[in-house]
Amino acid sequence: MLHITAQDYHGYHSVVGPDNGVLQYLTLGLVKLAPGEAYTGETGDFEQVVVLLSGRMEVTVDEHAFTGQRKNVFKDRATAVYLPPHRDFHIRNIGDATLEAALAGSPATGAFDPFIVTPDEVKPRRVGRDNWVRTVQDIIVQNGEGRVQRIVVGETINDAGNWSGYPPHKHDTYEPGIEADMEELYHFRLSPVQGFGTQLHYRYEPMTAEAYLVRDGDTFMIPDGYHPVVAGAGYRLYYLWIMAGEGDRVLTPHEDPRHVWVKEAGA
Image (tube, rainbow, N blue to C red):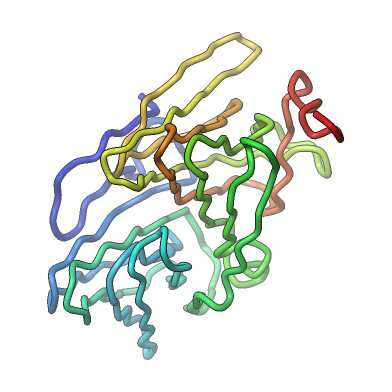
């Protein structure tokens, strides 16, 4: 099953573990802490990225102490902390409200240093047009070259009723300069919180097509295929996206030839 529905939790919650049976290169955990609480973890054979979703956090790793704050994913840009493999780390809630953070992971063997990505380094850009315009915020993409092994992290916010991942694209066949071969994972939030979106997933060979109703806190795994997503009318849709593969980190999606016409002038 590609669709994972949200669950109530406190402390650490493993959403996509290393033995999930679908993705080989990605994991996802969530952390929810009350004021003053802390979570202690170890990265093991994975590089991990702590992405702050809401609240005020302090992340300590090695001799570093990184801090950040965020009202919510719709109001502020992200703070993120990169954690190399085989490190102990601590996440502490230093605010007066609930802290929520995502821990994105990917297998890694390299020797890297921890670092922080601050909100000032996250540059929102508008992508697309008409009812498929959305806001994309790279967190660790090109700025990760030479600093991470394979993980790629960012965020997308759909305006109410709008599409993203559009025209539909895939990245499951490695052709240098044409298409990347990278798994992907989405973690969703909605505003207002009772909202919903629709996640599509389809392939041509063999032909399969599915639609999934996604709600606040849901997660979707994308091992292959085309995967556009649309927000319900009246509801803004956010998703954290995490990507990784065996090859390079260059984001080269292959757009569905049947639908690229929408990019033409006047379409």
